[in-house]
Length: 340
Image (cartoon, rainbow, N blue to C red; front, side, top):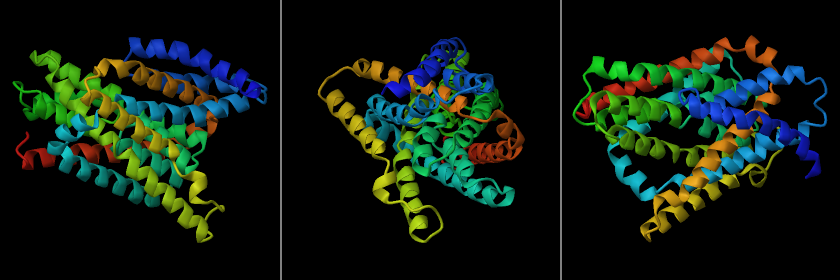
């Protein structure tokens, strides 16, 4: 454990101010600030050999712990009850995003790991989905940093433009449910979902009606992390068995932390049904958010900024196509289902 201390302290020195800056600027969020700060600081550290073990520990293990703790913020019964109405839209948009990512992976000749991370991050839940998927596909720090940056850009764009778009398209101003479904489906990250939904509530005096719907739809999307990571783990072992990749067994890469995530969610659901207040689980949820910031500081420190800039245009194109595809399909299906 001693070998991790120096690297973890550097990550912590970045994560703490990033966390508080994220509170001040929620549209940007602490996670993005941490990864950007790590990337900018990395070239200034001439000899990182003593820091590497701690940086890698933060980027890999702490990231997995953060995903597990996310489970303590999920009441599965509420998620599934509210998610029924939006489920067809969610399944369609998730499928569309993944298909777009597969197609553009071939057309743009992007690395498969970047394509997977952007596709999953766009259709599921932004940074959390990237955090869960990266260890399963053994993604490089540069791939994770690039994907998070792309997702962040369209998160901010959505948070700033969706309330205006909602007015133009004639979303209900008496009920927050339609815009909540739209924001929860078409915006990638929780922070930006919250920002867009809260803005709609404030604009039309809806209290927290829009926000409640948007967050619940968003949590329903989060559950898709489970089958996606399991499928990716299985595909990786199949490729290895066929000689298309390095030798690996399912037991070596199986995302056990996803099983712990499920256990935490079930545990939370059972205790809430027994009368335990939801607020009891808030500290675990907040700790999860902080650990994601800490892990992304480590990923930023392990990223080659020059390489990232050189290959940045193509991932941005993929992110744009996924985001526009999800948004357009969501609006179309909401119109068909008389939700808009």
